Length: 219
Image (cartoon, rainbow, N blue to C red; front, side, top):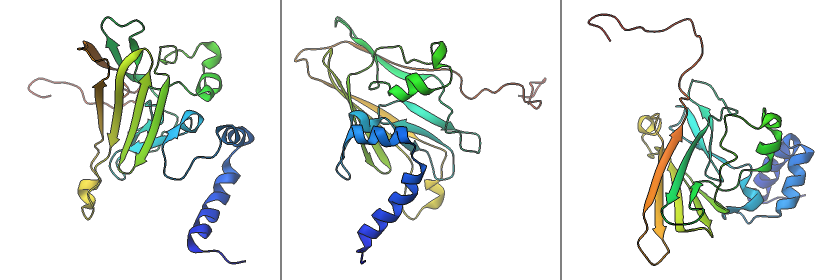
């Protein structure tokens, strides 16, 4: 049997991945249907998207397909299950149901499959209202999430990016990532908005045994 190079790479890449997927993931893939290569992710295709933001080898925070943040790996090792409660939110003055988290719907696997969800998923923002529609586009080193909701007369885009400068390894390895929110008014009138970003202190750790303490004439 003969393969052209593109088909061979596609086939060889699919085999290990299929071995790692459980029956639940395979069922989800069947439900979502086929997505054309290099197009936007929508609906069920958003559920497992996590785009790493950060310099090469310098840690990361992932931007998910819904606009959520996860995989906080900031301590010199991958920490893919680290998802502290952080979220951006928007309130539109004078609009009914005008206050929402700037994310698409929470994937069901988080609501029903994550640790602590049987007791109400404490420490998360899953119960807050969110945008009804989201789509995700990956164009490394950029990732874009677009949000829409019938209650909110805005088109919203979140862009996440990493430092990536061809031929400059040091600059491309900076511990930096950027997130930009853009708001387009579709109401045909002036709107008053309040944007906020909310986060628990995800840098602090428990008892470590070692610390630097303040002292006179020091820091």
